[in-house]
Image 1: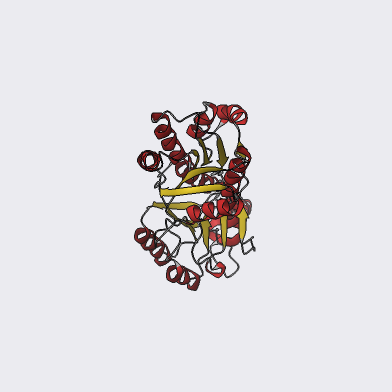
Image 2: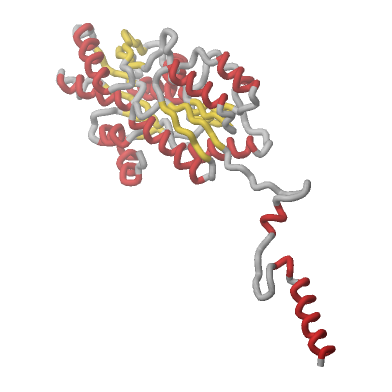
Length: 336
């Protein structure tokens, strides 16, 4: 009897020993996580990349759409995006320097002004933090200071605006230009490049008799256009090239107030809902799109870079030119 009892107890003890790695008898415990964390061959979980975004902020409908698209895209891509907007150069520089001190995985930069970035971006490069330029570029455009730039082509947009005016006035015409900041230390690359694109494509018989900085703003554009119309009231003004939709809408209000809507054609760049509605209504003559929805592309380039892959130095985002007819078709599904 004692021998039989001893055999039963032994079997139980042996069984428990076999199951020890899974816990006590009758219990199953997963110890794989603990094992994975020990030993030199352990596989560590991949850390979530932290990406610093030195943005400009919601200055216009285009900017709001662009920055929301970027934020959503990085969230969907599984990266933590630290969004810090400012339209002031000094604040943007301080933001990027903070990102460098915090040792983020990558930096996104939409520079409010193109100049004054060399020292800061050299510091980022020394820290092995890749920098991606969104929409705007730096001046001088030193390619070694950033990993890639992503956005539509400003020169293309300016060139297409000129092409429209060339076709509208084959015998020549006089007009105004409403620009973003193009002179001094606070010049924006977008404004400079749109003007350059225009200058390269405009016919010799088309004259821009004057220009004014409209601050990308409808209110400022109204004031500037009124002043220009008064200054050149004795001239035969036929067109206005406004470098974004907000300024084009402001120009349209000022032109309407002077009873010149049927006389002066206004061409703009951006392609916002407000701009397309004004185009359909006949308040604008042409709208050249500057597509803001490239967040997913930016996220894919950052992800590829962090995985050790090489990416293209420049990615141009495709855009289109709207007519009143195509704008009417686009409006029901327009995202911004």
